[in-house]
Length: 479
Image (tube, rainbow, N blue to C red; front, side, top):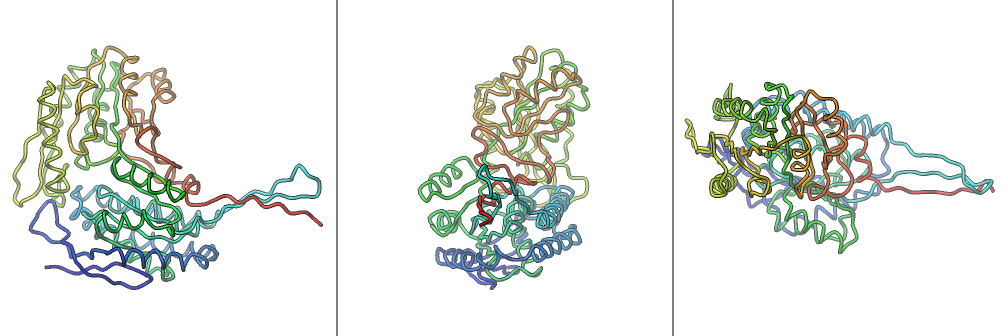
């Protein structure tokens, strides 16, 4: 049936109630059997993290640096192996899987360096003879809840800064992709983390996740996932007056103006909307095109989408892997039918496809003749489905792009410095892309959105400290 992978609680591998981890490219391939944590398991993990916090929060900078650096080096050395694991359990192509693993190594390396750059401020008081020190301290026990679409990168960009700044952690990965997080936790444990500092509890959100939300001993929660669950995290955290950070949905626009380079526009949209099977919160599923270039762009993009190779994620040459599971596949096909019913025109794709192995394969779907009030243009589908919206000019394009409850990423393809500059200032999104895909960000700069997409401090880079630390101001009189 496969190897058994246990939870890590207080430095010990433990647990039962194993769940099958299935390959979406080949549903007969069982990657392993992963523990299903209970309420009691989760409470023990929280208690272990709480007990480990006083010592770890005062640990030496070189100790933290060494552990994070060792982790980065092992991840990079094993990028082919771990990338294959990631692609087997999530379904993104092998090059994408290896790229994500490489990014995880870079994130750990960055925060290894941050551990040596922890700083504060010393400033004079307005009162003579009094000095002021402003320092940052660890928050405490951090609950981490992660999604299935980036099984290594997202757990990494939450775990690494949490540990760097002296916090202890209980992490619950998504049920569909426990293997990648298990591998990262195993590497960190062997890199020398003291017991209890990092705890892994795999299992159902209604069990493990809810126990994290209900615990007064969890000092902060960082969550990436659906809007509905994010609201539950917020409500539970407000009751306990704890810090919380939310990264949720997106309905990201890419504007294509008449002056755009056609090849750049087509490739930017194809990568944004369809690569990683469209299963990215930064995917551009609304393509807003001015009328002068509309027909040429649609014709070229249709041909690009028609020729996208959908197949097993591990096969050489595959551009689009399978959808992650049967439930997500049904959601995608349901929205395709909704789009047809709303009057949008399906110009290419949208059909289930068969391959050598049984899997969740869907040909990417492109709609035209859509408008911004259609459900396919307002609701996050989270699959390889995009809709083209025709507009008159830049002003209408900008208004359409901003007409959404979300605000994660927004892109524009143009050769005009005037419009590019105006868009960067006026796009209502946390991240703005000019002539590059909306999906694809650097590891050393802030990540996060606005409006219904995000809440709380940004993730990644030096900005991560805003969530994973708390500020203390100390006054000292010379005496």
